[in-house]
Amino acid sequence: MANNRNNATQTDISDDTVQKVGMALGQVTHIREEYTKRLALVETDDEKEAVASEAQDVMIQAVSEQGLSVGQFNAVVSAAEEDAELGQRVLAASRAV
Image 1 (cartoon, one colour):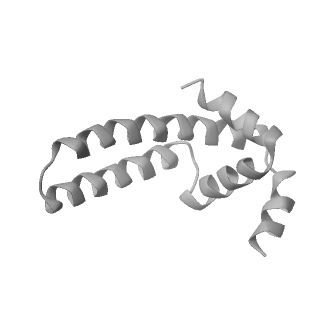
Image 2 (cartoon, one colour; image 1 turned 180 degrees about the horizontal axis):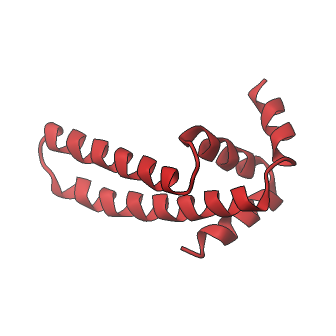
Image 3 (cartoon, helix red, strand yellow; image 1 turned 135 degrees about the vertical axis):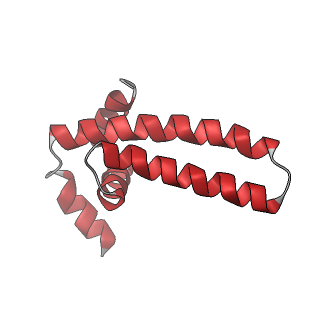
């Protein structure tokens, strides 16, 4: 059922939303890279959990700063994975970061 919803949504995604998702995706990618390096430096499970939690918070903030909810962001990213043209539009916007 989720696939049907994503297929219907793909045609409804505005250029503005694609730009916002692309910008957020670029930021999320950078955040993941940064926090992956930080995770490699910590030793205890508690430290790893704290770094992972901080990374999650920072990624949510990056998405929110674009005026999107995490649900909206995830829905467009999922649709972009299914629709090559939409995927290219999102990737082009993400490279502008």
